[in-house]
Image (cartoon, rainbow over all chains, first blue to last red; front, top):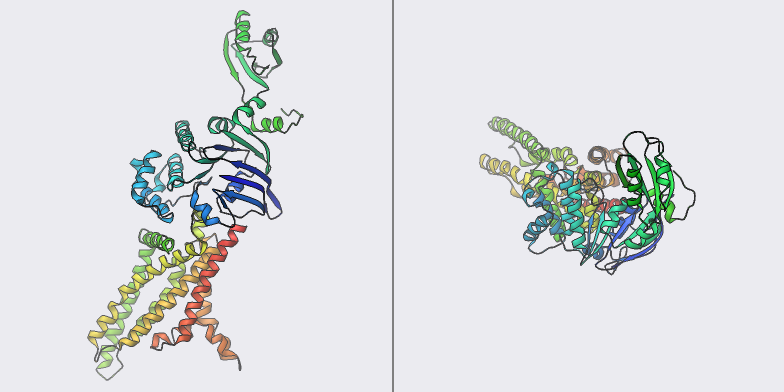
Length: 308
Length: 247
């Protein structure tokens, strides 16, 4: 469905993406994970026919994005990162307009259907300019779904949504991804883990890792790091924690909390909790610490310089 | 063709949902109305002493002048604003050719001007009833044909310039400046040069509309002039969008 080989894009002297190679099959949700400025949006813009690459080739839905751009655009649904919309239009009219451009038969019925799917039926006659960020995001998603595209490209689809909406949108994407190809970008690791079958990690215009979500998880969580906090003074806390077998890398933080690690698969948290309580402390918090994107890159690129 | 029509229709509807188009329509019709009444009264006084009857070309002359001022306002945001708001990204990733987008925008604005022009037809109709032996409708037809070609050219150039800029006011000033230049200034060398002055004369709006079609002379040269400038404007727009893609 998507096949990218040697894709390179320069903006003047700056190289935005460098020699990207990846593919995505039908019924697969592929996540594009990377920090801002990594080249996610640039790649997506090339795949949607918005801009041509400097070098390399991209085939989307069986057509070349440069040579057969119109054919590609007919088959791709795209939600740009900024969610551009005609704010002076009514939601229904806007979707009908975009549907007309794609020659959708019975376009008005389709608009109703799509609005229902993104849960905006009650705002069909409202002006887009009056909608909240979350609702606009859903209008953008509705627009991308209008023509039942074979390939759906979503640039940061959950950014700016409130937690409830994030869950809804992810659910919707997962459902769509069952029969179509979805490529979505995100800078949230847990989002990629949550909805994607496969994750491409991109940094500074290069793919640094590509793997299924499970494998990636296993690779990342060589060791899990946990934070522990007790009520009151806890000078001896670190010493207490160290007594438990399997605990590594104990550190006392400035705020009095203690961080420690354990090897993946050997969860020692119950033992640590017992030990802490038996030693007379009031345990108030014990939680896993997620990895930041920076740490992930360091981990995946095999850099051994531990920055903290 | 379908896409052009879809885009034109949205643009046309958009004019009627914004106060700007109403203000422009109102001001143009007000000025023309006042002017029309004035020449009618003035001429009827003169007619008692055998003076000349009013002509419709006086109205179309003013109308074309008002269009020169208002078309840059109507076209300035057509593409520049899409670039600013980011909606251009939607258009450029929809299955629409760049030229279809540009022609659609042009057609939308042209239909708006056509609507306005239709309203101004009341002036020759009233005039025809008041003067004897009536208007020469062939001249009226020529004036209006010229007016439409003139408007088509102005709008195409306006859309083309709008595609170059992201700031609509920049688009406005450049468009307006170009119109003034082509109307008043480009013909100047013609009166100064001994030889080759016809070339500059040929480039001027005045030669082809004010001094020609508006007075009832239809010739192929004028039509070719306006159509080629229209094509140039649309081509400029399409090229500017193409360049945006590569940047």
